[in-house]
Image (cartoon, rainbow, N blue to C red; front, side, top):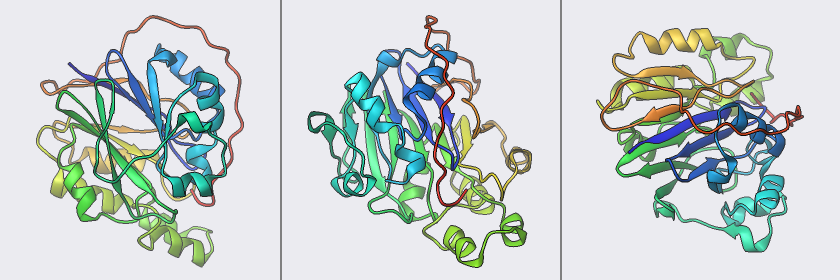
Amino acid sequence: MALFITSLNSGSNGNCYYVGNDREAVLVDAGISCREIEKRMANLHLPIACVKALFISHEHTDHISGAAVLSRKYKLPVYITPATLKHARIHIDKSLQHTFTANEPVTIGGISVTPFAKYHDATDPFSFMVEHNGIKVGVITDIGKVCDRVIHYFRQCHACFLESNYDDKMLEEGGYPIFLKQRIRGGNGHLSNAQALELFLKHKPPFMTHLLLSHLSKHNNCPELVQNLFMKHARQTNIIVASRYQETEVYTITKSTEEFVTVELPEIIMPVINATVQLSLFS
């Protein structure tokens, strides 16, 4: 038994995360276009027919821009809170709209998805824990600070998409206006490299095999810097920096292995069409 995970895109230009078993999968956010999701899943030999639901974390453009088309084309159920749907201003067919409640698991076939509230400058923001047969993967991005809820769920993760958005020095010395710097680091914005590392050092469970560092800022961070920072303390955990330009490999998450492998699934052919995505206010 295993969960297969990949970041299809991660950054202020679009976020989309895949978690699935060998029969069904869910996407967390769809901040890149439907065509781009199709293309990247095809690159990884992941059949889009396996995706049974889409979970939306909050209403910012880089998390929802592809949601309406994806849902309409594949009749895909979208799990989104009423407040988020209202402020997202996207059209999801009423028959495909589903809501969720904090800390109450949603069952999608053999997968369980537990939403939990987070600090972020959105209307009703959530992170998620995805579970299958006791294997747990966290999707913990767009968080302004590490709270007790984040710690509680992070301690359970066999793998985690964890935000590591900015380097403190790069943000401070960069060209962003003061109000935007304060918004990013003010407790309802994003998590810094230092904050993410502190969470990892203090609360990483001994069985965590994969950490995918996510939502890196284009202007206030550097993938090599983040990789080196965490590798010093990784031990048995594989450190992957999720890209804002392309999909990662697919990683196999189990209870017993510390190895990561690429999933081999039947090849499918999808049209390759470049997509234009909107930028969020800050990256």
